[in-house]
Length: 293
Image (cartoon, rainbow, N blue to C red; front, side):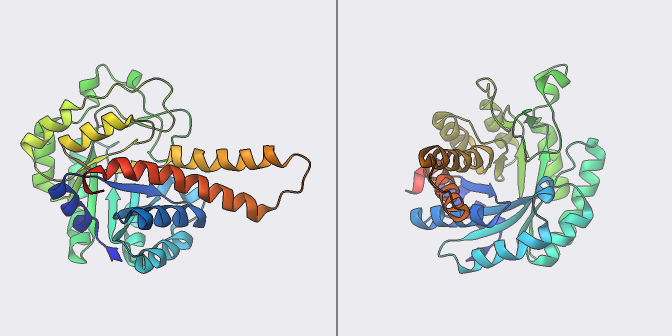
């Protein structure tokens, strides 16, 4: 069932759970995500990240994502993740994506505000939801395949310089009219090299100023307890990719190691990878949607 991001996040916000948003740069990822969501009967968001264009293009993977979404027994939003250009956002809208993220967070606040406002006007005219980002999500040097480049805490004089400011967020949301806002409070794209130090209270502080769905980027590697606290404080969409992809790779490695000198067929590797991803994604969904399961 193909739906907009605004629809699925409205329900999540009201019922205090989070919808998992999973980047799917191949057919097997799509199949794993849809299978996990249908087994749990929870809504889900399929995403194509612009930085994954080197793996597969939006034009190739987009129609497949949309086909699986339409045939699913649960609500599925098809979303462009970290769209950094006007052209990419328009491509996604023309293909039939029901949601886009326009990511101008690396630009000045004034540019981000102006460009996001224009994107929102266009997208809302054709019933497409829009996510934007304020602040900076850190990017690990290992597997940080979602964001727009490596950004670490060492790049800033203080964490306050990169975390989302509540008052600025209120102004940004009111001016742009975005449907969801990705906020920065210490999460990281890619593999965590050290234990994350999250400012979970910042979510609450931002929620006091604006009451819209908030998005957690860099969701992989966060503890179940921190996920649940973040959701309680106002997170309703959680982006998740790296650890799910690693789970698929680990399952393939196990199959190869177990095979010894026996022949290994590519289709068996594909099946193992898909199952490994599905198991990991289903476990993540169980945490995100704990309030409704």
